Length: 158
Image 1 (cartoon, rainbow, N blue to C red):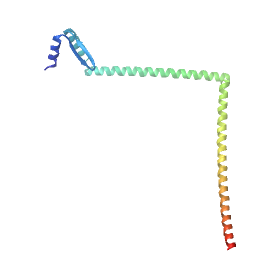
Image 2 (image 1 turned 30 degrees about the vertical axis):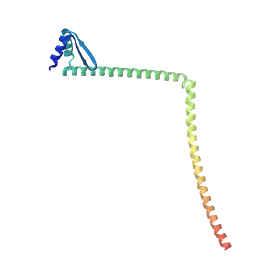
Image 3 (image 1 turned 60 degrees about the horizontal axis):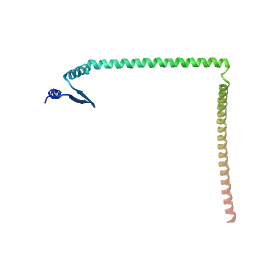
Image 4 (image 1 turned 180 degrees about the horizontal axis):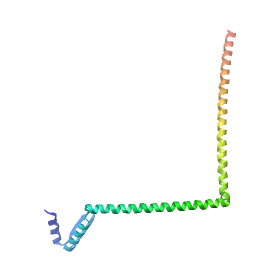
């Protein structure tokens, strides 16, 4: 049976109900059906409409990119402005506030201590290595001494 004839028969009975993509539509008269058909024709996805939508989407994206770029530039300018104000304040106070000077001094001291600590660690490592070498020499000497002592003891009593 033809779909149009089927729907025409349903419309003659009273109202036409159909579902599309989970939405149920109800058309009760021929005028509503004609209005629905006209709307459907108007919104039908032709190649020209698809291209038009793509152009609109691209225009929206370009506008968004431009807006984002402007916002980024404004943030950078504000950041530069804040930095220049801070620099001027530092010049006025000769090195910033007392708190920031102390913080810089603490960092310097810590760096110095870390460097000194690294040098100390290297020195300790060298000392350990020397002690180990010395111990090995002594152990070698002790081994030779005990070996010769044993041999001499053995020959002395035999």
